Amino acid sequence: MATDDKRKSGGGKLSRSETVTVRLDPKLRYLAELAARKQRRTLSSYIEWAIEESLNAVVIEEDKIFDGKNNLSVAGAASSLWDVDEPDRFVKLAIRYSDMLTHEEQILWKLIRENGLLWHGKYSNNTSGEWVWRVEEESLNVEYLREYWEAFKAVANGKAKKDTLPTWFKNPPAF
Image (cartoon, rainbow, N blue to C red; front, side, top):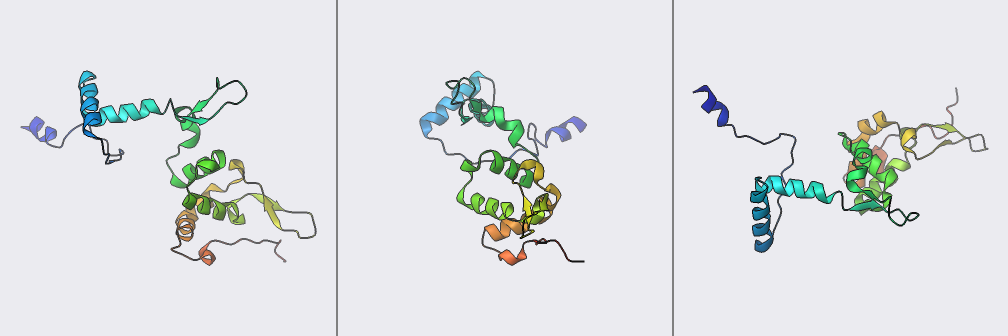
């Protein structure tokens, strides 16, 4: 039957979901299974729900002025941190919360910050006349970053040399 063929493909799986392997001790797994049953969910669905709920409890930015009344949770910061493109996502995190970068990400961020091609700027008026820019989200040339993203990652991971990165005119070109 036609309806039987449709059911064989499985249900409830979203192709955009990630599969993660998690180790749970027997007691925690048992209790999570009970909680999942109580909510009429699969264990996987329950774990996903529990993670989503915990994002409200984890403070990403502490409010030191008003005694924590305006703390920002990971869930609260989600819209300013998430982007479907990896380079965009990385820059959002690096600019807002550079203290959360891993060592490898810090290397990548340093390469990006120091590459003048990626940033809108101007040639300075001082004697050097060098290209200068501000490291701000609005100053980033996102198209160039996306174009050279893999090259930057390869250099940061030690799989390519720094001279493979794009260059820019550090001083105004002479015509």
